[in-house]
Amino acid sequence: MAGFRANGLITLTTDFGSREPFVGIMKGVMLAHAAQLRFVDMAHEVNAFQPVEAGFWLSRALRYFPAGTLHVAVVDPGVGTPRDLVVAFSGDQALLAPDNGLLAPLAARGSIDRIIRVDLTRLVQFGVSDVSATFHGRDVFAPLAAAIASGRCDPADLGTEMSALSTSGWPATMTRADGGVAPAAHIRRCARGRLPGPDQLVRCAGSRAGARQCRCGLESGRGGAHFGRSGRRDCPISAQLKVRANRI
Image 1 (cartoon, rainbow, N blue to C red):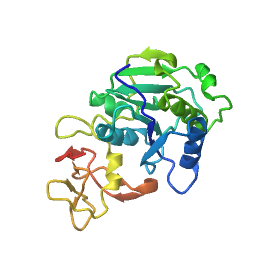
Image 2: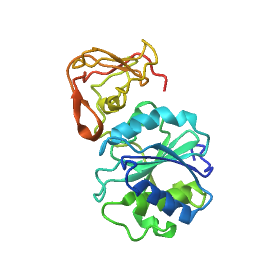
Image 3: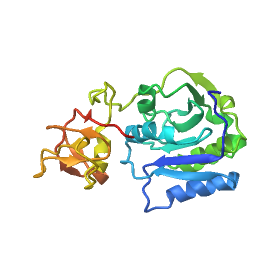
Image 4: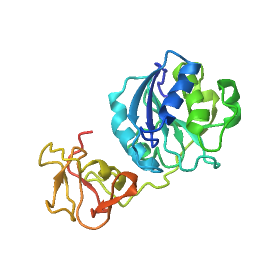
């Protein structure tokens, strides 16, 4: 299926942060099901309840991982609601995520080959039974990811194929120089004084310096707003983001 053969490597992308034990608990559940699994912490400081930001970074990161990697993304403001859970395939890798717009950035780049809508009634055999209303990362994603990554589960048996992913929250008005799109949320990481070169620029209209260079390769003009960690308003930036250099 889409060339995916699990290699036991799981990446984790969440908005859980690093101060609480939620990511560690997910890893513990997965290791309890398959002790040989390996993990890469992709990102855990994604803006809370911003699935598109998580998808944006995943869309840039996949090409650096080996065949058979399973990418698990839990940025899930709709947890406990009837939103779908999907397994999507990108070449020889797979992604497990809620269908809430998180995977829209990958679909926009043509990186999604096939999508399976997970039928939750089929998951009991993989240890999904006592599911809480708010921590599906532990109760659903973790045991299912362990089953997929360890090769105990064929994703084709998890549900039915679907033709399109949700694009909820995907901001089509924020355009890249090459015609693609990029979410404003990821600008929050840019203003950290990293100065790679003049070809990568983030302009902050509210900044005395007037411009700040950034590894992310996004440029902004006037208007809009920059939201830093925890949603704090930092400085005005453009709602029309332009990528001058995209090295990720």
